[in-house]
Amino acid sequence: MQTRFGMGGYGRIPQNDASLANMSQAHLIALGQQGNASHEQLLEMQSAQQGMRTIATKQNIEVPKVNFYPSRHPDPRKARKQDIKQARKLLLPTKRGLLNPLRWIWGHKYRYNRQTSLCVIDGCNCEELIKYDNLYAKICDEDTGKSLWESYWKNPVTDSPEAFIAREQVTNGRLMKGTYCPEHLHLYHLLCKWEAANDKDHNLTKTGMKEMVKKGVSTVAIPISIIKKKDNTPEFLKRYEGFFQMLERDSKTHSGISILHYQNPETKINDVTMIVFDLRLFQKEIIQQGPTLADAITNLGIAPMPSQQIGGLSNGVMSEAVVEQVEQTGLPQQ
Image (cartoon, rainbow, N blue to C red; front, side, top):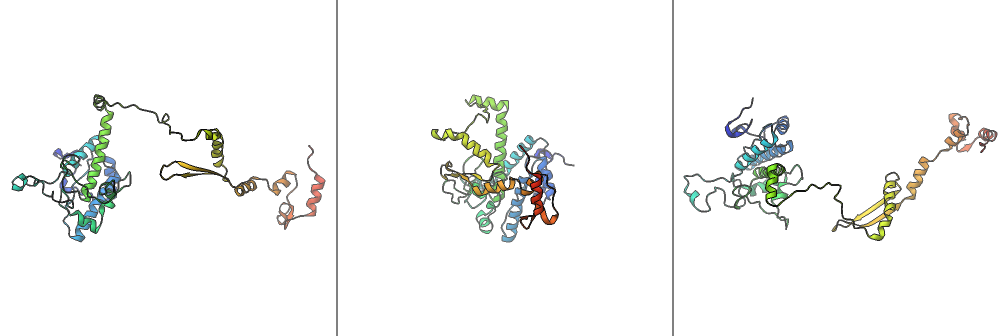
């Protein structure tokens, strides 16, 4: 039975025993249902830990593990706050010891704040990791599908590779010289998402609304039905609106009617619209829906012939008996 461990949070396993890399899928599913982190996020964290360990074993690179274990508090909001607190603590750059004289020299306070290829927390050489196996490109967001490499290691303007730079206070403070290894960067990515969700919930509370009003910001809820897209249809084409509506309705039931739109790749507007009537498909539908010869003979009240002469036909020729029967029966009088 799980108990509290001091300030570690509700039901949290001590940091020394935390290891998502060795957990089974059933344990991850149960953990995702209990706390703040979803099952997809736990899978990403597990794959990051496993990938880092694999590289450390094969390339003999010293890669300390990230001892993050999600909170299992029954209240999702409190669990998220505990995860945020733990993540911020784990993502703080590593400082030199208090007795180390270099700590009190300007610019030498942090142990691994030397170059962009080093992780500011564990000193891992991220350049060697990328050369062997780019884990940044393999860890993707469960919502957008974008990898950490696309989100953090690319210049948003030139789209060229550019190292992510960490900050002294994780999400704020002065920029440092180092970066985050894949495992720490993924935790940083989750921290940003959790804090954004936390801020969104806070703005919906009475206290949050009062804070927004004091700053001159007000929120007005507008129904989606009121918001309409700007209509760029020329005036002389609006009189054909009923015709196009009829075509769109009939195109759903008749395969012979097709409406083709050609979108401009720059403006994302349909520059060309074509209407196609395919006579071949119309004829095929008429044949499928039209009455057959057998149905016509049945309506006349003629008894069916043997199987060798289906519908009174023998090799495509109507027999004499059927002709005499038709003449005797006659067509119905109007």
